Length: 89
Image (cartoon, rainbow, N blue to C red; front, top):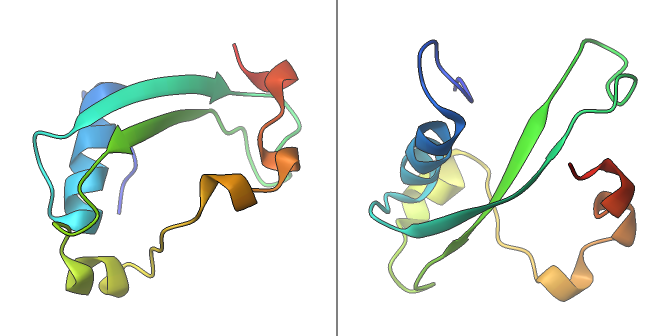
């Protein structure tokens, strides 16, 4: 799955990826920030743009989520090392 296709905005890519993973469309999404430290990925230069979406947990397509090996996490259980404010622009 391409995360951002040629000629696609990051906002539209985020909406498309959410739809591909959950089957949900027309969902409220907001950009949280971007992450682009030069040495953060040893393989190649990577820039990530993070989003959150507000969804009804009972409406997503469970089979699509399973097919993509996606899973839900409790935001209170996310390691703080993933939430480094110094890398948010």
